[in-house]
Image (cartoon, rainbow, N blue to C red; front, side, top):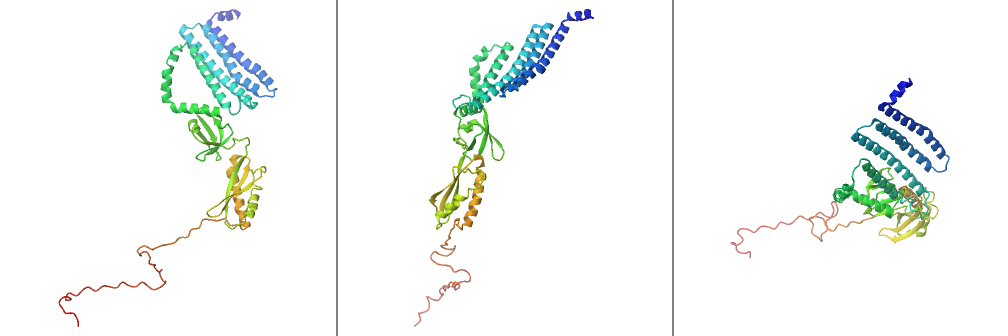
Amino acid sequence: MLDVFFELLEHSSFKAALALGGSILLAFVLRRIVVKVLAKLAGRTATTLDDLVVQALERPIFYSILLAGVDYAFDILELADKASRITTAALKSVAILVWTGALIRIGSAILQTMSYHARPTSIVQARTLPFFDILLKLVLFGSSVYLAMLAWHVDITAWLASAGIVGIAVGFAAKDSLANFFAGIFIIADAPYKLGDFIQFEDGTRGRVTHIGIRSTRLLTRDDIEINIPNSIIGNAKIVNETGGPYTKERISVPVSVAYGSDVDRVREVLLTTPAGVRHVAADPPPIVFFQAFGASGLEFEVLMWIDDPALKEIVVSEINFKIYKALAEAKIEIPYSKHDVFIKAFPGIPTGQSAAPTGQGAPPRPPTATPSPSPLAGLLPPRG
């Protein structure tokens, strides 16, 4: 039996199969034992960063051992030079792809942890996190492409020499994409808004920022609809960041008009009671009432109050309007409305200056008097004496 085994060892195919089986066994052992032990140790720490690192390294370690065993098995088989170069380059490319994905996950986790524990003077913060995340992905992707070319023994000198011409062609072909890309970088650098901010555009579109990407920004509206807006449009638009101040609160105004002759002190007293008890209206600072102007139809007032979240603006305004209408009705304070008096100067077909009596009023109009036609003998008979 041992003689048969030693005879099989002399065959390269058996050695390759043995090496491949050993690498698979070693990969599973490391995945089941070492990685599990590291995950258990990472679970005892207070932070979750080490747990994410262990989870991200599990797959590339497994595939690296497996790919190393496959490469060693092909070396034992002593393939032809061309076949050996192709298989080695393909295995290296797969390893580069797997490790690039793992490094992207680890880098993103590290950046998120740094932004979560950032100080006011830190470089990586919540508003700059998308910029560094994009930069990390670009660097890792470019490095993986470069290493893959080296694995396939591709000379990149010619590629670099023609990069200028290719760049011009790509610039003309993808000018919109490049505009969105650079606008996204400027948005991240200037930070007119950040993730979680509630913003509004000139056309009235309002929503919470859920994603800031290279090409576009995504908003979640109050209708639970996600809107994808290209960064080039956002870069040239006027944006109102409703949560951009030092606090998340926002002051809203509700205009009210009352009739002339109303007691303005009583009006202010009634309007000040309307925000009380309305949900999401902040008690501090307290609501105030302004006498804004003498309007064309009434006295213009404005109720100003603070709300906890800008996304709740429509709900609060509706509740306040309900209470204002009921409160003014109970206080017998009139809400004016537009009135118009119409004066008719003349009816069609009647000369200006003459009045036409309506039907059933006054004397009927006199019929026109007919003018007699001249007699044909008027010039032959003598005049009457």
